[in-house]
Length: 274
Ligand SMILES: Nc1ncnc2c1ncn2[C@@H]1O[C@H](COP(=O)(O)OP(=O)(O)OP(=O)(O)O)[C@@H](O)[C@H]1O
Ligand SMILES: [Mg+2]
Image (cartoon, rainbow, N blue to C red):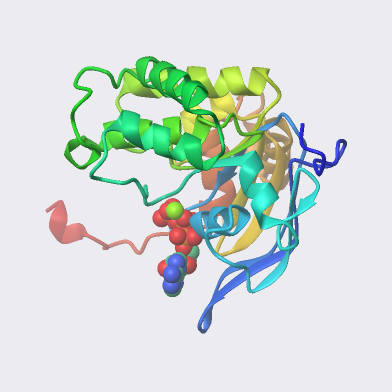
């Protein structure tokens, strides 16, 4: 464990995290306190501010206002130390196209200061685990979308990060690859890492994540364990409360919290279904 890792602090903590794009506030006063070891889901509809938040938490974008601590380390004071401790798979995978996956993982591992031997061992194991060894000479530019996603995850894991940030990791990956990825992530949680993930695949989130924040139009609208969110939705809705005994899925909870009350005009798209 790093000297600057303040044991007992949160894995991720933000106070008043805010991002403005010109006249538009994309992330508004977000406060997070994510305990270590959690599998944390960060949910919200398209354009809610999830990717912008992840970019700020991982140093890919600077906040307009607010503070970020990762493992008790202040991001603005010690960005290099924070980056040493975290791994990230961003929304737009920034991979080096002209390398093979093995070369790329070696490059990333060496950047983190791992020895040549250690990095080769880890890269080989990660690529085997991700089933990316079929054609070792293939360049990343010629990879399929799912192969690129798996390569990006492997690269994010090579230095064994304590906190992992994943923006839509399951988007476009097949069921077998998704299962492989879920297994890796759960093994990391078993080892005490913390995972912060955005995903629209709510049944996967429901299986993996214990705790959740829902963001809508830049503002957090719900926070807590899935059970707490479920209880909150029941408390807020008479109709749902009457349907007692029914256990709402995360998807139903999400739609209730984010989409609740949205009514479509009667004739919308009527020409499509004439
Ligand atoms: N670089 C940028 N410049 C201007 N506006 C931006 C920029 N990046 C994001 N936005 C805006 O900020 C808002 C939040 O975008 P963001 O990408 O964080 O949403 P998201 O929750 O990740 O959505 P999705 O589920 O579609 O990935 C959107 O209105 C988006 O248009
Ligand atoms: Mg996004």
